Length: 111
Length: 113
Image 1 (spheres, each protein chain N blue to C red):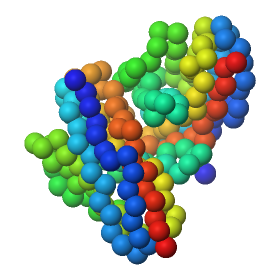
Image 2: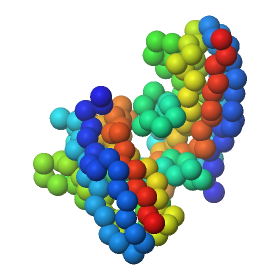
Image 3: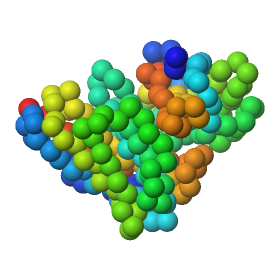
Image 4: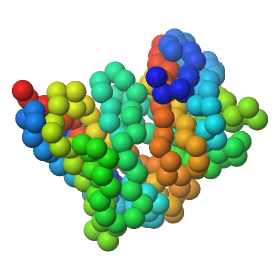
């Protein structure tokens, strides 16, 4: 079956580093997305990984290991505005190339 | 502002009715995605079009249909509406059809009474 798992909630402190993990089981794989979504707003695209390794974009980095069905999103120098939900999603190449979402991780930043 | 526009912003209708949601992608973007977000289901991918052709299909109900027109705007048609169709419907666009950055519109909030 198809399954995307990520923690429901996490808490971190302003200025710190947090890692949000995502594990997936899909029939096929054609890329993994991370999105940020503030309450009541539209999602914002953060990253797309299709090859193994680490992709860095400013304070945010995303890592993928296809053999382990694992990804993480790393947020550095946390700011209060990083309080949001973070969604992991996988494009399933065996399933009409559809995009399957995890339930999201709600990140709380404490001052 | 992402550059993606969606109309209407809010829509209230009754069960059994049909509605059309409209999306205009960013200038130059060829791909349009539709998503549904409800409180209990989270974000669900519905369908993707690329340059007028259906590119990928998610868990889109048979009562729902979409199309992308020659000017690249897209419409999502929802028919025989049920209470459970109440949700936020997002449209996103990207330049190409796969790994490009997706830009989301502000969404259409649909309430079925």
